[in-house]
Structures are given as structure tokens and as C-alpha cells.
Length: 182
Length: 182
DNA sequence: TTCCTAACGCTAAAAAATTGCGTTAATGTA
DNA sequence: TACATTAACGCAATTTTTTAGCGTTAGGAA
Image (tube, rainbow over all chains, first blue to last red; front, side, top):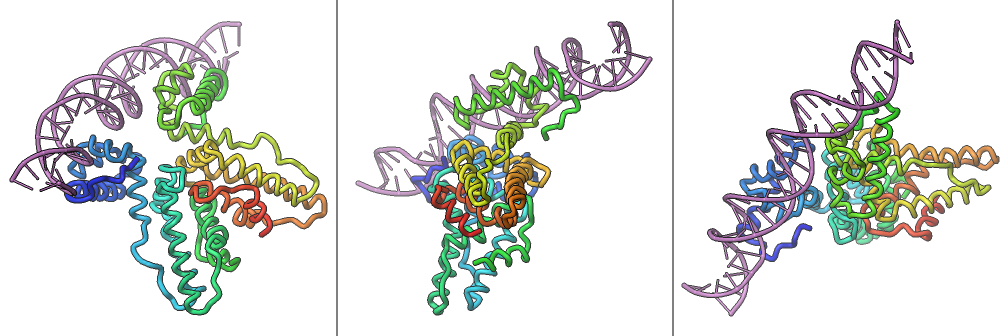
């Protein structure tokens, strides 16, 4: 659900911020299983019905919070060369996502939606945008660019796969091996 | 949770079968959101407390059912050559998983566990076993084999990635392109 | 300022999850 | 086969969560 809010200022915005903050705070304090809507509501100083009306249920609220946290705050580092740019970005991506919280964020996002317009599609776009930034920088330098979809298939997808299925830790060595395939 | 059952015969087995059947039946009739423990219990002719005691909660029950459905019933088709064996397997895999129910099964499995011994790890093993079967056949024929982990990274992982994030449909053409990279 | 109404709080009712306790039946042993 | 043991279940009471009605508050526009 997660209505896109006809009113985005004042009280409505304050409540959203309070609820998001409550989710983030409680996520660290209590386990995932103990995280309930009434608990979040109390911490945020809000009635549970407000959360139910605005987000629908817990999973959608968690997905909404997850996309906020996965939303990039800045462009990937400019290291001066396409190879090192990519390496820096991928290593950081694997680092963040492979942690228990990172994996949980991914699952929260995936569980909420099945179509492109949903949270999952947006997170997918975030990654593409970062790669696009790196690619544009590369072409500006005169380096020969890489294909973004190919980068996703060859590098990002395997990392995500192993994080989700937990059959292998995407350490630096592994990530570098993936990058070498590009 | 999903206790491994000290008693596996008689009533215990009948109830498990009834509950699993109820989940599979109701999954088609009602949507995923409407699927509740009391509803499943009623259909299975069981009290809700039985389900809660045995599986813990709905998500673990769904994961348990999902691994059963994802468990291979037979070896991949033997088409006579490694290339066609792989292609047949991958196309079928993509076909099954890219449907709404397939995607849901994947998410059910992923949501339940984070370590290798869990449902996700087992499903991962299923895929590996299939690939292993194809590889062994190939070497028996004298064909030069492929690396299983590489096949997962290059072919399976991208397919799963696009299914989960919903940013692209893994059609036949796309799958063949992935296979060509091996 | 004034109006309109989206969004919230409060409350009651419905539904789901938890727990104690007695009962049933699966499994091992004589 | 008969018996003892206890895992697993059913039932029912309790707690918690979710839903829904209705009045109130506060953005946003005229």
C-alpha cells in the first residue's frame, strides 16, 4: 500500500519521521521477531491505527523504511579510474548488504512488491544509477565504458544471490574475481 | 523452528500432510494476504495451536511447504549433450521460478532462514545437485565439464536476481544469452 | 481568515497468537 | 501381545494484534 500522501508537510511528515526512527531504533534493540506495530507505535508516540491506515501492515512499513535506508545519500567515490571506481563501489555494496541487517533490508524490500514500480524495483534502480554514474565518468575520461546490464548480471547478481541464499560469503577476493570477468 | 519431529509416523505424518495440502490448496483459492493460520487449520481439520506449536508461525510453515515444492522429484532430462542438458534445465528453472507462485516460493524460503542449514541453503543445494548431475553425465560422455559455481554465478544468479527484483523477465532469449557466456 | 478534507486519535469489536492442562496415540520394552 | 512412556494433539481461556467507526485536528487552497 504505502499511499503516496496527498499531504506531505507538517504533522504528516513529522509522524512519518517518528515512525521511521522508531523502526530503526527498535530494530537494533529487539530482534526482528519481536518487532510489532503496537510496539513501534508506542515508541513513535502514535496510535497503532495510524500506522495500519498509512502503511497497511508491518511488512509494508518495514519495506518503506528499508528503501529509505538503501537510498543512496551520495554518488560513488571518484577514484580517478573506471576499474577502481567499480571495485570501490562493488566492495562497499557487498560489505553493506552481506551483513545481517543488510540482508534483512533486502528481504524486506523484496517481500513487499512484485512489480517494477514497487520498492524492489526502486532499489534495483538505485544500483543502476550508481553504475550509470561510474559509466558516465568513465566515458568523460575517455575510457571505454562497460554495459550496465552486463555488470548487474556478472557482478551484482551473484553477490546478491549468495547473500540471500547464504551459501557463500561475498568477501573481497570473491568480488574481485567477479569484477575480473567484466 | 520447524522441529524435526521425533515421531514421524501415524498421526503426526497425517497432520503434516493435511496441513501442507491445506496450504497448497488455499494458496490457489485465496490471495497470499488472506492466508492465515486459523484458516489453514480449519481446512486441514486441525486446531490452530497445533500449527503454532509445530511450526512456530505462518512464515515458517510457508517456508516448510515451499521447500517441499521446490524439492526436485526427478533428475533433469538427459538430452544427450551437455549444452542441451544445461539449456533444458535452465529454461525450465526460469520458467518455473519466474511465475508469481515461483517467486513467492523463493521469497518464502528466503524469509525463513539466514544460515546454510536453513530452507534457503537446502534450495540452493537442490540447484547445485541438478547441475552436478548434468556435469557428471557430461564427463561420462567424455565432454569437458563446466564449473558448477561458475554456472550458478553466470546463469542462475542473474535469473534469480531479475525474478526477485522484477526489473526484467527472464525469457528464453535472455537465458540463452546467459548460457552463451559459460 | 475561512472552508474543505486528508490524516490522526480514541474506542470498541473482531481476529489472531499464546499458554495451561487434560487426552490421545506413537514408539520402545518386556 | 500387553504395558509404560511421552511426544504430539485438542480444547479452552487469556493475551495480543488487527480492523473499523466516528469525532477531532491541522494542512492546503481560496
